[in-house]
Image 1 (spheres, rainbow, N blue to C red):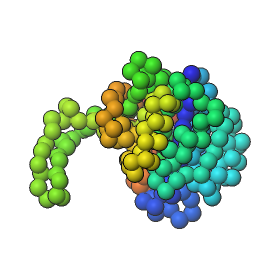
Image 2 (cartoon, rainbow, N blue to C red):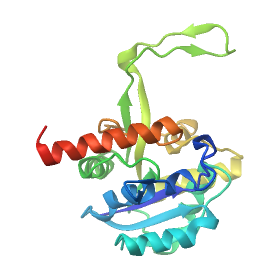
Image 3 (cartoon, one colour):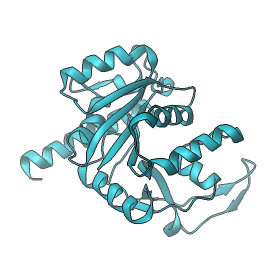
Length: 238
C-alpha cells in the first residue's frame, strides 16, 4: 500500500491564463487536477492522497473533490514559493500519520496522462530498489553547454532520459533529504534532482507514452488531443 503526494501549487504564469491556475483549467468540463487525482483515487494500492495547493484555491478544490467523488484526499495544505518547497511542506504535513516504511508517490497535479500500470510499477520497483524515478527516453540528441554558446558535449542518445513523474520513495528516505535541504540551503528542480545532489542511488521506471506536464498553452492542446485519442481507442478499438 502507498500514499500519493500531489503538488499543485503553481500559478501557471506560462499558461497566460488570467482567470485560473493551470491545474484548474477545464477540459470537457473537468479540471486538469481532477483528471490527475482520479488515477490515484481509483488505484487499489493507494490508500491516501495529500494535495499541496495554491492557498486561494483550496476551497475550490474541496468543492471539486465532492463533485467528482474523490474520497482519498485526506489533507490539503497551502503550497510554498517553489515546487521544492511545496513538496517539502507536503512531506512534513504527513509526519503525524505516515510510517517511515510507507511508500510515497510524488506527482505533478498537471501531469494527467499516467495510468494504473505506471503507479503499480512505481510501487513494485520501490519495494525492490528503495525508490523509482519515472523516465522517458529522449527522442533527439541532447547537447551540453556551460556558457550558452559553445557545445561541450553530445552524450550518446541511448543513455539519455527525461525525468518524469511519479517519483516514488520510502517516506523516511525522501523526508530526510528534504529536511537536509533546508539545513543546507538547497532547492531542487524535483525529487530526482535532489537525490542527485546528495548522491543517492536511483532506479528508473519507464514511463507511459505521452506523460506530458501541462505548463504552456500548447501543452493543453496536446493533452486534449491525446486524451481524445485515448478515449477513441477505448470506444472504437482503434
